[in-house]
Image (tube, rainbow, N blue to C red; front, side, top):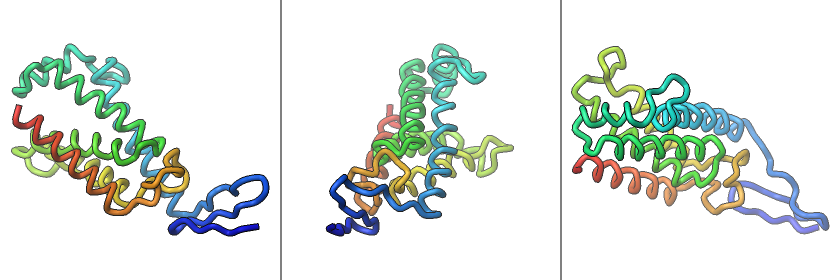
Length: 181
């Protein structure tokens, strides 16, 4: 029997393959965080794209985006919906976590830009909710998705600054592009 160590996670090689990953409280906490925020984000995307969960659907959401100055509104509503839906599912599953985090982070930075004139608190249309979701996305990118994720076999499973910087850069560039259009 050989013992292999890979970063902070350990696995034991046997004649039948690798043992399951060790799961601790941090992994369970990351799973809970990813599932909560990821499924909320996916739900927001489904509202925009498909009119599910009480949402208005793509055409009506597109009109709202046009009213905010995003032209063509349907395109930006679709871009936002896809980013929320796929980014949210990626976070929830722990799949392609740096990319999922970047998608959520970029959308939330843009949402903060839209609500910046309204202050911090949600009661006045402020940025507290998108700011919280942006920080969660960046945090998951920084620490990795944990052992209870589909990404557990990829190099970014343990986080680190590489994926976090990628998420920040990709999300920031996406937000800047949307804001400049």
